[in-house]
Amino acid sequence: MASFLDNFAHFYPCNYCATHLQQHVAKNPPPVQSRSLLTRFLCNYHNDVNARLGKRPFDCSRYDERWRYGPPESAPYDCVEDEGPTAADAAR
Image (cartoon, rainbow, N blue to C red):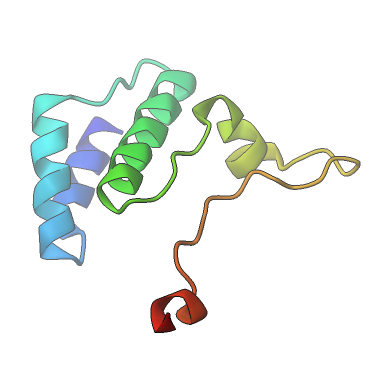
């Protein structure tokens, strides 16, 4: 996984994002001892990107609900991020 993330950071299509991810991985090597640690690392990095983009953070305690298992059928799905301004917001 460490090699994959290092390579992924070099092949990411957006040069700005690729450079930022390379710097982040170099300063903060991903913890690959367990899926849980790695998933937390990736979710926290995702939230760093959200912060730079002005989006609200995702609750990383819910990463399995969002990306692995999905929410219980009886629960409303509120495990989504704000998509940002709509076209109507931009027109104002």
